[in-house]
Length: 153
Image (tube, rainbow, N blue to C red; front, top):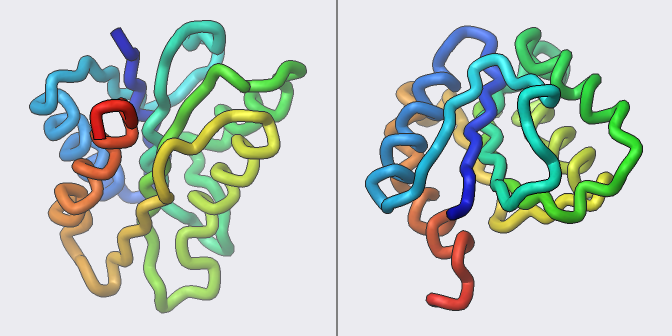
């Protein structure tokens, strides 16, 4: 069975709510998940069939949240292609700032450069328009579930 790890990068906590809402809906669809509030690459295998759902807020000028920076540093140190890794990204941000969802765009680019495969379009939630961002996740989850098994579409 596919292992789905939900990796969370959160500054003020609202992205954790998004991740928990995503976890609930993914599990309702019959998949096993693991929520990682402080992602650590040392606790993950890059050699098994797994999917990362990265729920990440943008901090400051497009920066990663403090709890996610060490994980990105670990990724940068990987000396092998991540060709077995599939991922999806949920970004939260505020469009009134110049670097709207900058962290989600940056991690997407990094993983792509490392050879990982994004299985669906990045989903960006604008907290300026949706102050309860976890309410928006139900719009994206069906696309993600369909992307898990494209042969069943």
